[in-house]
Length: 378
Image (tube, rainbow, N blue to C red; front, top):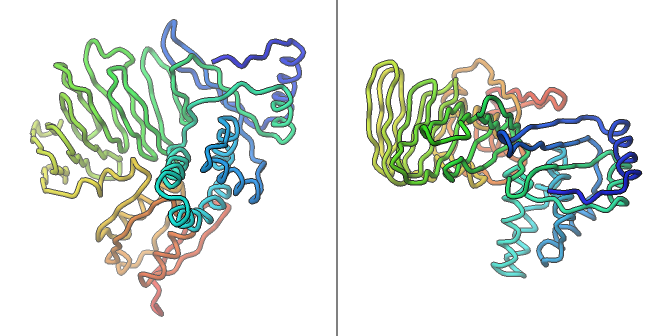
């Protein structure tokens, strides 16, 4: 992708502005050999959009009048700070209801598409910017430059190139999706990492730490997901694998067939669609489940049914990039919740947890640590 900036004086001005004004510079290499490229992201912390312009941008988007450049500016602003995200989410419920009442399904779907882009933490295209626009962005300490080959998706996640392998990380508070060399699609959940070779000729093997949903292209070559607990093998199917270091291995099958092997015990089980296997110690536990509950995260939702507070707290930590400390009170372990989280701010979630169970909490904004305790007076 070319920036369309040819004037040497413009380049000098831009280089000077970048070196003096911007607070952080991250260079992320991608690709292998002749197809290598670099993503350059310059991000800072100053807000560039007030509430009036935010409402105006959303209204223009729903009317189909928001340019690619304006849409990029909106997405970057929302992803720039959690405060910005919270401000954005505060008005989403009323706007969604208004859209449904007055504008019908088409505008509602447009709104859902904008939410999906924000939730996915990705930016797929950047238009060429004029020098005036570049200077104005620099003047408010906010800019983004992406230098990459065409047809290679750009995402706000950490991507490294090392010895013909790729390591893709979705940090806490972010999720992403991408294609593998065989065109299989992966959705990577918060706090997760996927490693794989850029050449699948010798074998389709990926290494997962965390959680991912796979939609695997059919092939004679088996597709293997390797984890610290065991391996999941398929040939063409869609399934979810959860393999966080502090939790048990869990695989949920949506379509097709998968085999799960325990490396230590040399045991293997096979799943049918709608089944889930969980490795509990040295034992495989298989049960029929509602797969939507375990795969909805890829669509920007958390669905939980009678989930106990300690387990739910772990999911919320990764989802919102916070730290949750539970008081050492066994009564907290017995509290469970059922519900669906979709685009709500973390402050809203905390209030919902508080009013529906005997708990209270305190939040340290500087450290982003939430302390939850049992509330005897509830």
